[in-house]
Image 1 (cartoon, one colour):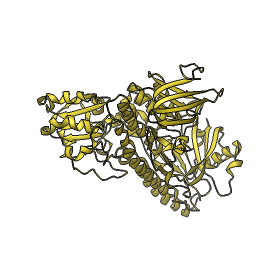
Image 2: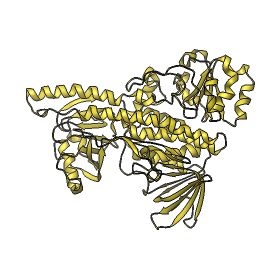
Image 3: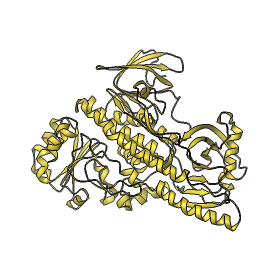
Length: 569
């Protein structure tokens, strides 16, 4: 049924029609609803995810959840607060431990972050939580927002786009009834087989079908319950369990820290995926364990690792693509779901600004300009992590209780520990995505720091994430930002320019002026900084440039992108 509506209605109207109720679609619904913009979301599934799917929420996504007010709720989901989030490698789960990269529990992360600086100067640390829990939180918050209608068990049958908007035909899968949705814009967040992307004639480009010893080719995913697992293995608990041998390579994430696990294994030559039964799925898990540990298979399916794909376009007129519909990852690094969240954040404030008449439609052209290069960057990082893990093959004697076997395990352990640090300590990937060259970013001629996976250099060079700091009393600088636009001033800079506020308000924008101590000026290397709703720096300048804020803001809102060179001078 339609949430809050009678199935007898034949027409709905909304500003945005969202196809897809995964993380991207739900996050977009939250971004729009918080801004008072109406949206109808449809998804063929009966509800949010049952299977665990993605298992890592990166720090940048957590910062966005904090901005929306429910980061703490997300952090309470999944593993118990004191559960270690280590990444560990074994010959088999009951066999030899090869390497372990220690990471903090959820409760420890919340305290640890306040003392970190440099690469990990952030409002939030990553959280290890299965996507199924994240989707449930996103859905609960979206459902509470006026103007947001979530319709699971419904599919988009067809749509037409014209200068006047979008008309979509929706079918209820339960009873076959159909109705229309009239909207200004359509967003396809409908997964890798996206009907919306295909309707636009947009195809993926990049790498696919990559074969590796592991994380390349067909994989078996098993969602299982085993109350005996922890008691059956002679090792400390971990969040991620990797199995490294020549017979059965696998990784497994703890879902709830008690008895549920998401197990993934590479199918071996000769294994027929169409013939896999529940018993064979159970046997694959037990083979990785190295013991017949009792388990219940909750679900299983096959999927393909080895993708590094990005759509050759993310917009056609009033229609946009986000999430897996726009980019498809091999899950190393946990970048697919997190990239999808930032798609929604970027598109959400822009759609709202256009719908409300604050910005011209031209602002929306910056979505693809900004997000597609980041998708290319992130899929490349994920591919490199997959190569590092999947192309490193175990020595034949790695399980032998011999000196040769011991040396093979020592060698593998050194490599795998280095790999774990490279894949799971990635502040550069997490925070370093940039929108250089965007028509709504006002460059000041400075150069951004080098892009590196494992090192992040905070920089206020326009086009990147606003540098973070912890203030007195344990307050995050980000908590002072407005939900929409923020103008930071270091000392009393703007007070001497009375027309400043008037110029901004004349454009219809919502800007919060935040005055910070001069001692923080070095962090931004400027007297003033204009922060976008997505916490990206749109512009920074000196006190003498305060009078140009009106023109800068107009550019950032998409009104006068062609004046970029003049504004930057």
